[in-house]
Structure formats: structure tokens, C-alpha cells
Image (cartoon, rainbow, N blue to C red; front, top):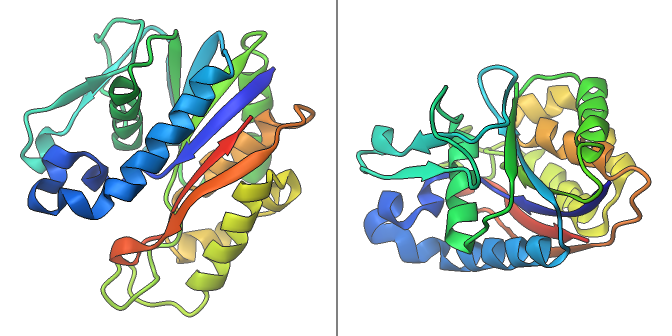
Length: 232
């Protein structure tokens, strides 16, 4: 059963070594992620599952690692409690592994990558399956909101982006499972909101769990919507 979840964004710039001289710009975001992970650990999960997007559906159950070498940084992040052999973690999951290492998490951890265009019903079903992996499961759910919040954003400015992100923030901050399950995959793709599929995994996992939520961060630096929420 799902006992807690931490929802965090996954930009590589979250890692200070990658952000370099601009690292201080995301200090508040890092602090919010740290707090969300502390709440997750405090709930006492037996197993943590990291969920983020990847080029294909893939799971890591015996550990795993990913690197930030593509950003010119000789830094590796690995999942706690397992080996590092095998396929490299997807970029979103690598940021998740870094967040877990930063928080000192040592719990058994699995990771799951889902395609950005995965159908909602499959994501809801996947979430239900993940929640049944142990008596007490915690999720670290990684995903960014729309990338169209300003003219300098990766997707340029789209007038629909602010409303999309506002509705998303309300859903994440109130554990509104129906709203997350109903996220429009087509609109999310147009707005480059790559967290849509992972958030729907969360909605499926939280069904019947009776969790409450708190939104810890909501902003759009660099024109991309970033959200941090704690569910417990």
C-alpha cells in the first residue's frame, strides 16, 4: 500500500555541480525537495520506488546508476541498496537517485521509467501495481510541468501553459486523484509537460490510500513549471 509520496521536478540544473555558477538560483527548489523526501522517509516505507520518464518502459529492481557526464560533470548517482551493473538509469531517474543520495536514503529502492506518451490507463494500472509491491511503499515521482511559460522557455510561450500548471499545482497540492487521472495527454505533449505520465502513476498508486497532500514549491524558473509536493 502507498504510505507516502514525494513529487519533485527533475531538471539537471537541480544538481549544483551541473548548474555551476547559477546553482544558487534553485536553492529554494532544492530545499523543498529535501523537505519532501524527509516527509517520505518519516512515513516509514519498506520500499521506495522512483518513477520518471524515459525513452522506453524499463525497471530497475537490483540497483542502478546514472551519470551527469553528458553535462560535462564527472558525477554519478546510484540507487540505494543495490548493485550498479546493468543499463544506465534514465536522466530523470538519475536526478531522482541524486536526490535520494543527498537525503541519505538507504531504503531498498526500485526505479521505473515510463514513456512520456504512455496512455493514462496504463499509468494508472502501473501505479496500482507498484503500490502492491510491499505493505508500505513510498514513491518518488519525478516530472516537470509545462515548458512553455515564457518566450525564453524551451517550448516558447504558450498562453495555455499557465492555466495548465495552475490546475496541476492544485491537484498535486490536494491529492486530487481524479484531476491527475484526467490530465489531457495531448495538451500535456503540446505544452511539453513531461511529468504527465509519472503523475498518473501516482494517481493510480494512491487510489484508496487516503493520503493528504501539501504543495511545497510552485514556480517557473527558466519558463518551465516546477512543483514539489508531499503526500502522506
